[in-house]
Structure formats: C-alpha cells, structure tokens
Image (cartoon, rainbow, N blue to C red; front, side):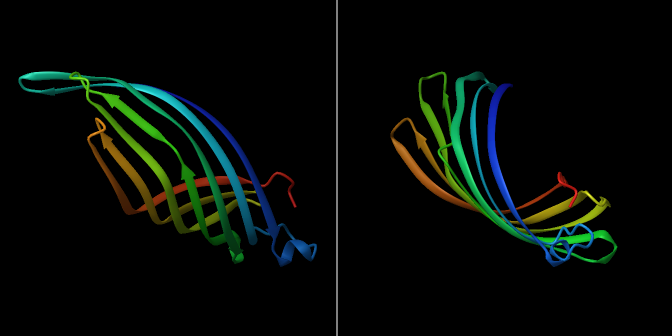
Length: 172
C-alpha cells in the first residue's frame, strides 16, 4: 500500500492557571483550558486484494478534507507531581475517502463529526514537562455511498487510549 499525506495544522490554546500559580507559588498544572484547531489533509492510496481466482487492484483512492475541533478541559495537580484531568472535544469534518474498483464502481466513505470525552493522568518529570496517559469514550458519525446506488449513515461508539507529553513554554 502506498500512502501520501499532507497535513497543515493551525491551533490555539488558552489556559486558565490554577490558584497556586495566581498566588505566586510554584508553577501549577491545575486549571482549565479551552482550545480550537483546524486541519487540512490530502493523500492517495492504491490497494491490491487477492481473492482466488481474481487479483483486484483498487486504484485512485483519495483522501481529502478539512477538520475543525473545539476542546475544553480541567486539570488538578496532586502532591508529588501527579496531575489528573478531564476533557471533552468535538470534531467537525468533511473528510472523504473515495476508491474506484476495477469494474468502475465508486465507493465513498465520509466522516461528519466526532465527540470525545475522557480523562488523563500524568507525572511531572520536570517542573515544566508533563508525561501523561489518557483514555475515554468516542462517538463518530459516518456515511457510506456505493456507486451512487446505495447510501447508509452509521454512528460508531467506542473508546480510545493514548499518551503524550506537554512542555510549559513560559515556565510560570
């Protein structure tokens, strides 16, 4: 499978520091935040499927789309450098993936929106660097079209797990 993807991201995040930071103490990782973001993508893919006695090559698979996201969350810093938090976000998109089979049929999968709610737990490895694991519930809405003859919308519920790192830039 060949896959090429171009990604451009624009993001803004606004944080509201916790009481310890406002009182002039050590930097606090507690407090609320809201954020917005945007993403554009484009790519191509070619798949070969072997089902005896045929070898089918689905060519011309293309991905494209624009996605926006809105997020909000709150973290609380416990003693010993442990941070816990909760967050939610809503993604809206017109992401689209289209393939054409050898017999000329066109298949299209489009994602409309997704909603996530979850929590995270992390540890401050330095006073300005947080490593964390997260997980939670997700729900996405999709639509599938087959050769303009069949269309079906479907909502999928599931869960996610992940992790990451955050670096405080201003050190306060």
